[in-house]
Amino acid sequence: MSETADIVVIGGGIIGSSVAYYLAKLLGISTRIVICDRGPIAGATSASCMGHLMVTPDNAQEYALTKTSVDLWRGLHEDLGGFDYNPTGALYLAETDEDQEMIPVLHKQFADNGDQADVLDQKQVREIEPGLADDIPGALFYSGDGVVLPMLAAGAMLRGAQARNPNVIVRANCAVKGIERDGDGISAVVTEHSVIATKTVVNACGIWTPDIGDMLGQSRIPIYPRAGNLAITGHHVSPIRTQLLEISYLRFAHATSGVDPTKTDADSGGHAVNMQPQTNGGCLIGSTRQFRGRNKEVNRDLLRRSLQRAQRYVPGIAQAPIVRTWVGLRPYSIDNHPLIGPWDPVPGFWIAAGHEGLGISMAPVTGLLIAQQIAGMTPSVNVAPYLPARFVS
Ligand SMILES: Cc1cc2nc3c(=O)[nH]c(=O)nc-3n(C[C@H](O)[C@H](O)[C@H](O)COP(=O)(O)OP(=O)(O)OC[C@H]3O[C@@H](n4cnc5c(N)ncnc54)[C@H](O)[C@@H]3O)c2cc1C
View 1 (cartoon, rainbow, N blue to C red):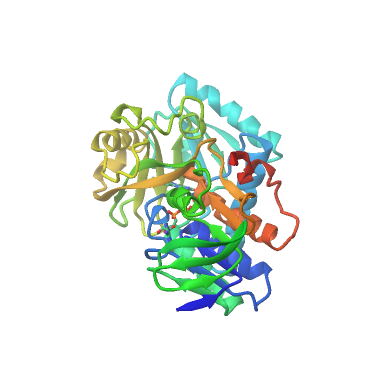
View 2: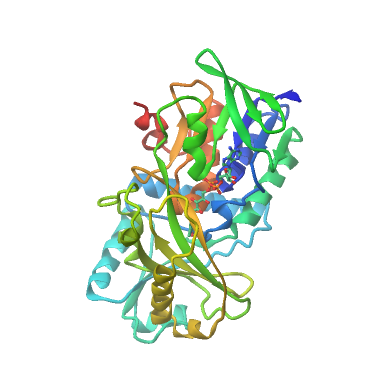
């Protein structure tokens, strides 16, 4: 079978779904957009993660990207709904003196961006989150964060895209096998079911983004899987109502120095606890980080350490039965920043990938920025630091 499309989005995770949504929103309804996933929609990393919508204030650029995106999530909840959006805020918990020293630093980072977070003492922490141990010395509360259920959100975005534009076609179980060229550019996407003539392709394949790049004979796109072990309790037993993180999570998750994605031995992993209330009354507990290729076997030792940390902060979690454990693979780009924009050597080839542990947070802004660039509009956020051109050799 052969057909045509103005744009083919490869990958139906949270990022591809958001790209499709904003393309449908910004381009005319005659624009034919096909989104293909080789499996179910949002069946890969976006089904194996947590749903913390996190504003990161580390610097003005990161803040602009994450804050814009988390604000867009609020708008999507109002416009689309149906994905368990919960504006819980986030508590950054301190335990040690070193942790305590991070609280004013993080507080200042929010303030430097014109935002506000609250420094809490031992008593105030438990007023916000009664489920916490009574010896937590302090915390920072940021009210702007929230939680969503990513699989539901991807579905809502695609339904929203189709409601705006009947020419949005969603194809699950439709693997892309190749990309045909026309000179420097693209002429077609070859799927397992059809050949789709098109000049514009968005590669939103998460950890498989480099494999799609390889189809074009380009230098390998530097995205590596970074495994995370998760556990979830049964429903209606969560002792918490706020998104919780050890404040040391920031050092652990966002640092790039000393990170070598090609080092995959068992000792290279680490953990910092992150606990997330679910609207069904469950509690999702993570989160570890380890490079070990595409291996999705649960690392019991790392997960056990996360669960011990969870009990240290929230003793009541020990009574909540764990009903499932699993591993998700974060798409880690070599400089720990996403790729959002054109791949210049191949006109018409775009990349939206490499969001590591912030892909749910950053999905709306990523979709918006890709759609704005394709539409020839001025991007809402400075996209220069995220252009894939930085990896073109
Ligand atoms: C343990 C863990 C916890 C996390 N917690 C958070 C969090 O709290 N907050 C946050 O913001 N982020 C979090 N993340 C990160 C977030 O989950 C990811 O950044 C995000 O899901 C990546 O989405 P994606 O669409 O790029 O990738 P994916 O969801 O993996 O989607 C890529 C899609 O491409 C498809 N594909 C691949 N090859 C082909 C092909 N040849 N043809 C067609 N389709 C193809 C795949 O089937 C897949 O569905 C977490 C991740 C993990 C692992």
